[in-house]
Every structure is written in C-alpha cells, then in structure tokens.
Length: 362
Image (cartoon, rainbow, N blue to C red):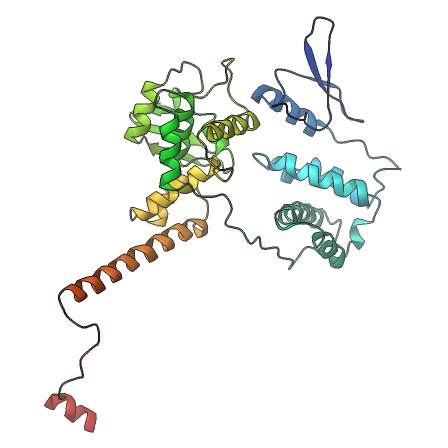
C-alpha cells in the first residue's frame, strides 16, 4: 500500500525509471533525500532539512512583534531543539497551520479567550496536542519578553481515553499462534512485549546492546539509560531468528526500519493473525506493565524497566492489580466461610468484661 509523501517532499522519475525525492519548501535549501520515503535514512535527512533554517522574516510574513516572528524565533531556540522523538515535527506542523491562519496578529495581544475558542474547534486528542504546542511557544515568548502573560495559563484539556489498548492474554496467544518462533514477526512482537519499550527504541536494538544477559537501552523519548535483564523467552527467540545486522529488525532490503515503515509492517502482521485494529505495538508495552503489576512489582521496579520519569501512570497498573488481588482474596474468604458452614454475619457481642465495664461506667 502506497503512502503519502511527507510534507514539502517532491518526487520525480528519471528516464531510467529511478525515483528521486527532494525537500522543496520556499525559503529553505533544496535538499536531496536518500533512500525510500519514510525509511530511517530518508527521515533523518528530511528532519534535518525541515529544521535547518526557517523562512526569513519578511515584511509580508513576519512583522516584528507578530505571531509569525515569534514562531520563527522559537524554531531557532534551544527550547525547540531540545524536543525529542516525533515532537519537533508534530509541533512544527501545528504551529505552521496556526502561523498561516494568524501569523500577522500581534503576539503580545493574544487573549486567553482566543486560545479557548481555537481549542473548542478541535477534537480531544488534537486539542491536547495543539495546547501543548502553543503552551511551549508561549513559555518561550515569556522568557524572551515577547509577552507579559501566558494566555494558555490555567487552560486544561483532559482526554477521556485510556489510550492504547492493552493486549489481552488471548490476543497475545493468537499472534503467537500465527507467527512461530524464528519469524521476524515473532521477534518484533517479543521485543515489544518482553522489553516494554516504545517502537522507536525497539527498532534500534541490536545484538551489540546485549551483554551478559542484559539489554542496554537509551530511550529516544526520555534519554534515560536502562539496563533490562533479558527474559528467557526473548533470549530464545533472538537466538532462533536469523539476524546479522546492526539492528535485530530489518526490512527485506536489510536496512533498519523507520518508525512509520515498522508500524505499517506490524499492522500487516496483526492483520494476518486476525487481530482487531485496536492491537497496536504500543499496546504490548502496556501488556508487559500489567504483567509486572500483577506479579506484585512495585512502581519503582516497573519504572526501572519502562523508563517512566514519573510514577503516576505506573500507579494505575499497580492499583488495578492490587484491587484485583484484594478482590480475589475477599471472594476466596467468602467461599471458604460458606463451605465450612460459618456465617458471615458477626455474632452479638458477649457480656463486657469487668475491667472494660468499669471503664465504660467512668
């Protein structure tokens, strides 16, 4: 299935039938993009070209003090360049749309009511991403004294969603039944499940990251360095799967996966196994966190594997596990009392002892 090219990418085919792709955007350098669209090497050069140099500030686009000028300055700032993972591309896409529609407006006069009105036009997930992008921009503007007050202050957008679906035991078994040990699909699945890492970290894993039964991972999103003991089942699957490249997971051409390409391939593997669209790769991470919580692991123990910076999200798993554990214990006690013929109703209290009676009379 063909995919739409990334924004600002143009393609042409020469007379020998070879495809060529270029980054073309007004005001930006023309850059040739290597490899196939959405591949790792393609996206690396694309992201560099996208962030290389924002369009020059001009009278018609970025008047001093305008929203457009503030966004252009933000792109040059350490605050923007410190963003990791897919955040830079997502933020830029949001801000460029905002810039196109309202770039000439004075940044210092941007009212809170305007931000709320914009949010009310968006769906919950889009509103959350939009607010995060605008809020980060406004924090930069305050630091640069472009505005005095943050118009996003106090605005909250809660998404009523549990996020990615957590794979059930039945769904795990269904995938494993269709993709035997030794297949690339089973290796990808096992890496996601038994390491509890995100897609971007899994596609960069290689044998060089495994030493003495420990997998070392530097998370792309958080920058955290993790040392994760290799699960015996994962060890067996890695040993049984043909590899030989810098990364364990590679495309048919032997290259490392790009994030988008891997998501498409994993979706295809799930479709072959007859799994619903709700079964995503990130759901394997949630499945492993659930297993760890059910096994009685503490939030700190789980965080040592997942790499979460805050424990709030992990507490949801441990609380659910604790509730289920307590419920099972309570029901087992009730069944035991029923089988032994004892009543669950407490008997009337007997006569009060003399010492206690004397205290009560006082």
